[in-house]
Length: 305
Image (tube, rainbow, N blue to C red):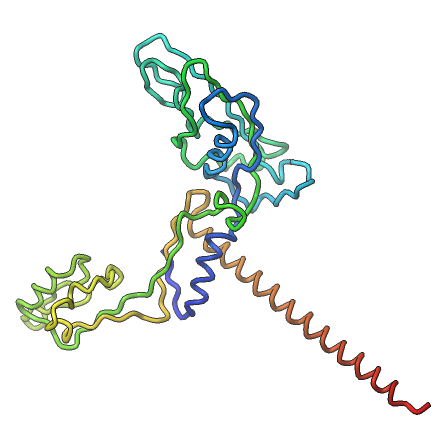
């Protein structure tokens, strides 16, 4: 949760849109299927793999162009090789942690993806664990004799290209609630107000021996209006919002911490602003050059023969 204070709603919305669609991450883009005898079609299997969030810092990679060779700076490679067969007992546990009537590897989970370091990646990322964010994401179910063998490449991209590259499950904001008492609420009325609020916004404090209601947790307020639903309370409690104070909520998919995502969103917005500024400068210079050329042509035309 981040507080944005003193900014316009357009800025808060820009951060929200950038977080959803323009902060780059790594996701599975290429799938090379060597053997797939499961019930899933190759295309469905590849799609399910692409939606698995991969924990890797995209700042250490660059986007791979269409005709560019894959290397350690633009690709993360994984291998998946799982075969289902019957075990010797009634409930043998598979390598994927499954128990299913003695079947081994009947459930293929994301934890079965094995990272294949390319080039110097093993040295570069020795202090970072590259792999799926969660190891218990179901990819497919197998029966005895079925097998999946494949290799896949993770590439850098952004959410506006495909949702699998979006680093957040959601990013939202709301205005900070502001609750005021038009007149003091004391005694039994304070107790009643305390009971009315389902979000525990109010507390009671002792002011000169009188139990008085106070606003203790305004951020908890969801604007449900329970406290002013009865007409007599609408004249005593005022609900408003602080127009330039946004409570910004970021729910990461786990590929990067929320604080890092917000910093990258700020950098993207700054770069967009710099690009727009340069574009306007170039346009002004172009207009000035065109005007000077037009003036010079007009002077040449005006000279006597």
